[in-house]
Amino acid sequence: MTNISEKLTQQQFQDILINIYKKSQESERLEVTELINDIKQQMMFVMNRPKQTSIEKKI
Image 1 (cartoon, rainbow, N blue to C red):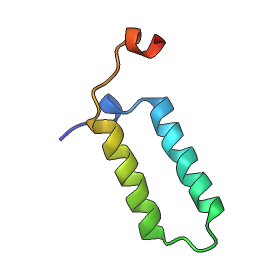
Image 2 (spheres, rainbow, N blue to C red; image 1 turned 120 degrees about the vertical axis):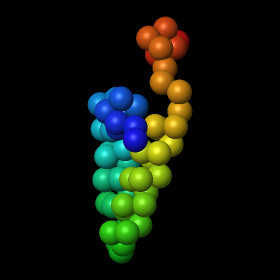
Image 3 (cartoon, rainbow, N blue to C red; image 1 turned 90 degrees about the vertical axis):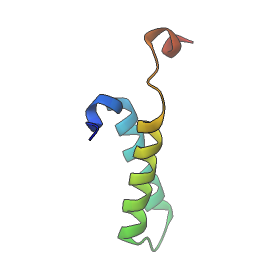
């Protein structure tokens, strides 16, 4: 099992939370399961990407 903290930076996690917050503010009726699935999907996307090296981050 992969440790989330090994794949997900603090900034990436913060970005996910901000995206979820914005989505919840834009919708009048948002199901909790939809919100949870969205969080899960975004985290899986980030975790399955190769981690950037410090050189790639600067570009």
